[in-house]
Image 1 (cartoon, rainbow, N blue to C red):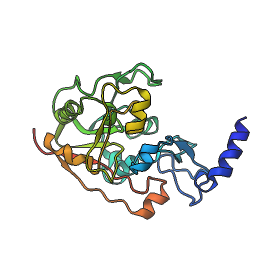
Image 2 (image 1 turned 120 degrees about the vertical axis):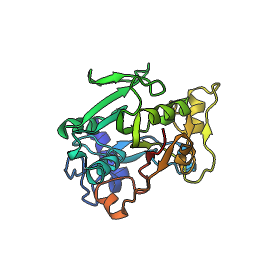
Image 3 (image 1 turned 90 degrees about the vertical axis):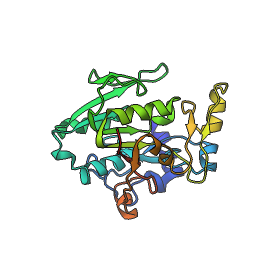
Length: 257
């Protein structure tokens, strides 16, 4: 059965399934001959051309990093100088395993948190704390960086989460806040509490999302004491490292207490 599915996948998605451009996974430093699927098809995601969501072949079969993991990893290695950050304090929210494994290799002081919620399968060890992003138990001005990769779209009380991220960051600290968003919408879509599972999928593309972000979602977050930090990555580099061709790194700096 698995062989049949593999053959069918190759026949239908051959061009995107194979590593046609000989791309390198910068997380594990390997060049796999194919890429694993990620995401799912959704009519509303296609209509609004949502970046950072939807079905694509993007996961490395060697380390299971995603296209968005490799985007963050590139920044950490090339610009944050992570390998010389033994004195830095990092908060990683809902940590992705491919990135989580690298922190120890880099000898970084990192705290991992996630909120265990019914209906999800969690495989974290005891080193990842059960915590709520809207009510963090850390003192203010603790972290040099917060990595929060595709989490905010799941949280109903987004303002409180952003306030908490701002509070625990040190002055001039950085926050990576990746979310899926539509570059052609000017207003975000928010679910109603009355929506059932099917209606949520129809409205925002995924049953556990509470909103679909519009273009440049970070503009709404600047009011919480952040400054957006532009970070450019060339099209060629994105292709070489199998990153999403257009997803920006949403990088914010804390500018006020």
